[in-house]
Length: 167
Image (cartoon, rainbow, N blue to C red; front, side, top):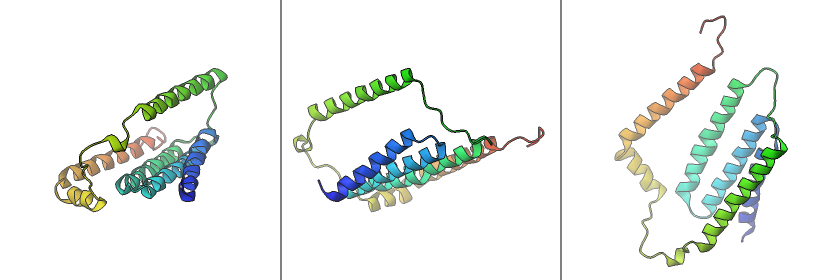
């Protein structure tokens, strides 16, 4: 393993761990953003440009920023922080994490290796995907854009505080 891979993996793991352990919700989202950016950098380093750029645009650029705005718009004036669960919920969370880890480890060790796969796999560059989106799939892309814009406007309208019964 190269030093850059280890550094990016450490950034992703530390960002995710900080997101789980910080008490302030805004800090949690920012730490999660750091973890997702580390994953995007890992994808880019491993040669998966489309997945890396999609991770960067969708998760870091949209989901994380939307989460920050949602927290800022719905936050109470007292500045309350995220409450940590009881001991029983921590134990059940740890057991669930161990179960997920065991299933993933089993899938990795018993799965098919890339050398066993036969046949040529299609390889599409980011440019080819962009051309397809802008030419062949432009109408569905526009419809999704309008739908997401309407959802964002609706969320903003719902987040506005009512003052004196008037909007």
